[in-house]
Length: 298
Image 1: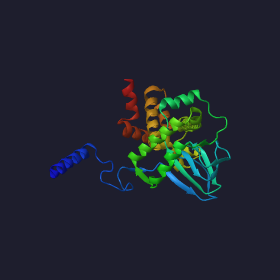
Image 2: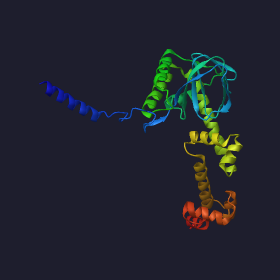
Image 3: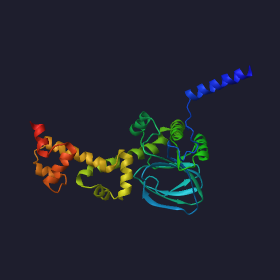
């Protein structure tokens, strides 16, 4: 009878394993697992006197100060003393500087898309809730404190399981959305919208004025590496590929719909010669500029 029960239990375990496959798939070290991704929630300790010079943020982040005091400086938080149990948000492309006044223990949550709220909540705050006249750090409520303390214990590596990170993102979104008012969240929503939109606006207004990615970065006052990273985070594709696609769209539009001569289109888009322009069209569209224009006007 005992052997039968054991055998039946084994079958049940087998069936359960088939229905509920392991998340880890036999790999116990998250740092080498193929599902590992860069950790977006990091625990950092700064010694007293540590200074991070002013620099543009290459991604959005929320800084939660668990212990200590930190002098922060940005457009929203000019010369603000961030104290234990408070947090702030810095948006992508904003400039941020900090100085640890005491030994500081903090948690950074880095993200690209504003996934902290549902679209309707985000849009409601943008439309119906005015941004603060003076930005002040937000208090960490006990429920958020529990989340942060728990995160410290197992989010120490440079990489983490993407399934776990996804769950922690959702948990943080719930805590912020449930325990904070629309007015509190406006300190997060309005800067996100402002900086993302301002970078997007800069690119759309200026990409036609330059010939290279380097020129566009220089026009905005960015280093090339910083510009590429911010662009990729905002547009979700490499800047060179994006500019090349816009260039192709513009060429086809001018060939099909404008009164420009082929020579004028050639030099408008920065080609050094008509043969160079013709080779580009043949490689990109499978036909010469003259044939492309003829196909669409015949």
